[in-house]
Image 1 (tube, helix red, strand yellow):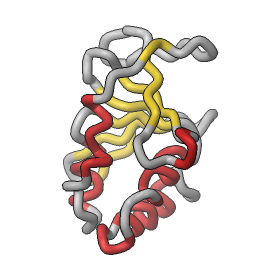
Image 2 (tube, one colour):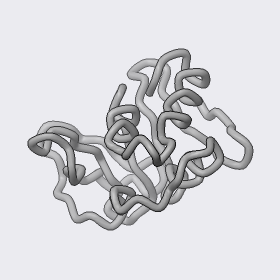
Image 3 (cartoon, one colour):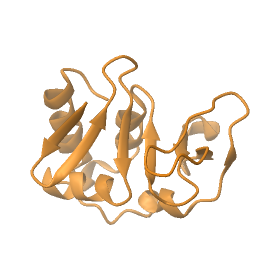
Image 4 (cartoon, helix red, strand yellow):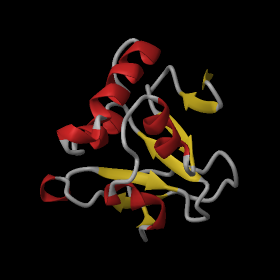
Length: 125
């Protein structure tokens, strides 16, 4: 299912509640909901990863196997996301996008983005 927020298309799977954001869309979403999108934490698209041994997700844009990356600053490397190796975007399993946004400093305003996602999906993605 594709949901539109202004100029941003948010790809949402109703079955697994996962979210696909094309490259740059996370930053745009944060900016449009009033959060600052200049945090180094958002350099996820540049992070190197390796194909996941457990999951076989494919990029919806190029069909390459997604690479698993570890989010810097996550507790004990606990938050792992899936990234297209060709930089087409990021896949967030249910609740991972909310977990990522909660890592931002309070003054960043990412809570506004979380509130928006709660409204958009019924519960946070």
